Length: 282
Ligand code: ADP
Image (cartoon, rainbow, N blue to C red; front, side, top):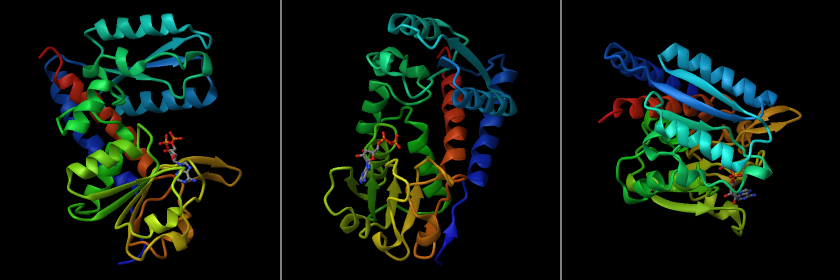
C-alpha cells in the first residue's frame, strides 16, 4: 500500500490512555506524579508550551509545576534550582526549557539532573544505559519515533534504517534503539556526501535534521516508511524535513508534520514521568 498516513494523534491517545491508568493507580496509593518544568524567562513560545503541558498533564493525572526563573538567571542559580528539585521527594520528573540561551550554555544538565527524574532522557546515565541496552529513560522524541514504527507494525529486524541527523535527542538515540531491534542502521548528517545515495537505500527513513523539505521524492524508494521528526517554522506554516506532498505518493507510509511525531512526543514525555513516579521511594 502506498501513501498510508501515520497520524500521531491516535498513537498519542493510546499512550495517554495507559498513562492515565498508571497515574490513577499511583494516585489511589497517595502518590501524585509531578513534573517540574524549569523555565528561564517567559517567551511566548515557552508559555504556550508550558500551558499545553499543564493542560495535558491535568487530563492524565500528572501535576505539572512551573518553576519560573528570570531570563537572566545565572548558571549557579539554575543549578541550585535543579538540586532542590532533585532533593524534593514530591517531584518525579524534571524538564528544563529548551533551547538554552547563550549565557546558560555552560551548564552541564547531563550531569546534574537526577537520572531517576530525567524526563527528557538527557543524562549521562540514561544515555549510557541506552547504549548498553539496559532499561532506562530515553529522550521522548526518540521514543516517539519508535512508538510510531511499532504502531505501524514495522518490524525493524534485518531492515535498513537510515537516520538523517545525529542529534542527542533524536538521530543518535533512535539509531541505538533501532540497533537494539536488529535493524541495519546508517546514520547520516550534515557532512554526508550524496545524502540521496543513502536515503534511497532506506526501508525505514527517520529524519531529524531541522531543514525544511530536505528529503524530496527523488531521494526515497517506493514503499519506504518515513518518520519525520522535523518541526520548521516557515512563512507557509509549520513543515517537516520531508517534502510531504510529493513523498507521500512514493512512500509506503509517512508521518505528517504537524500531527505526526509531535503529539506522540508529548505523550511519551508524560509516560516517562509516570514511570519515574512508579519507582518513587523504591
Ligand atoms: P534535532 O534537535 O531536530 O535533532 P539538531 O539541530 O540538534 O536537530 O541536529 C540537526 C542534525 O541534522 C545534525 O546531526 C545535522 O548534522 C543534521 N543535518 C542538518 N542539515 C543536514 C543536511 N542538509 N543533510 C544531512 N543532515 C543534516
